[in-house]
Length: 345
Image (cartoon, rainbow, N blue to C red; front, top):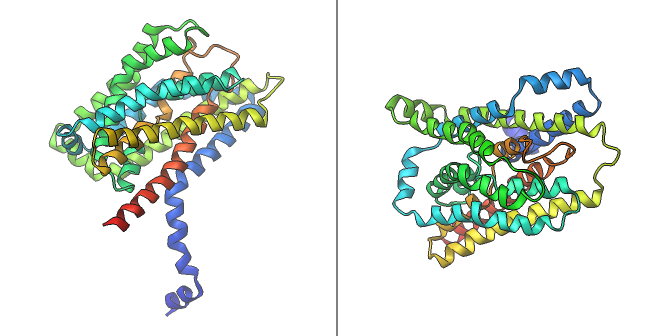
């Protein structure tokens, strides 16, 4: 009776909606909160505490753990399914690590701040995210097997392609240590990805991954926020000694360029998939996986001194902005695609 009374008043009716929105956007809300708090800690907090935090939390170690957990939680059976029709995964990978770096290089020309242009290019040469590509694809009614294979292919291929793109796009601005970047990506990206997949070979490993997949994903996202905190604290410490901060116009232009790059990936994945005569559910996967970028690998590259020299405190901002934009945009787009597909059935 009490529950019925509360429902008639609208209190219980609102809870599922609030809960649904929280489940959709909790990571974005938490990401923005962590970014702001960590930035303020680096900017106004005790220097010794900030430096101690940065000494304890190493981006390379944290990224290695995150990618291992995400690779271990991938559904290997779905990966095998996608290998039967590889065209979609190959096109999504080509968009992600082939087309988007070119688009970002063009968009970076419209950014007057070197930090932002370099950060945008670093974001574009990072592989597809292991965290949300398949989630959004499944949410939209797409073929999540393709998105899983795109994440795996791009995380493996980035060991070769990312250093080559950095050399092509950034070598005029800095002396790129190609061997050092390859070594860093092999140790922090390729190995944990392969080891995570190898742990799925035994039956007991698959059973554990299946049982605790949601928990593993949650822990991975918490560690991503830890990586964001490191980047924000470092930026705050740099900001202390910077006499001039980016203007609102600089920030707005940077956000617009991140939006353009992500939109280009979505459009290329969708309409290019049509040219390849892919099924609609496959095109959804190529659009989402082809346009999404992983934050941990991008921030890992941003800590490499041969890529980002000292004196560029805002280089991580485009990476964070791109990640926030893809979370918001792809949530709305996935819901729209799902609604349209449901109406057409």
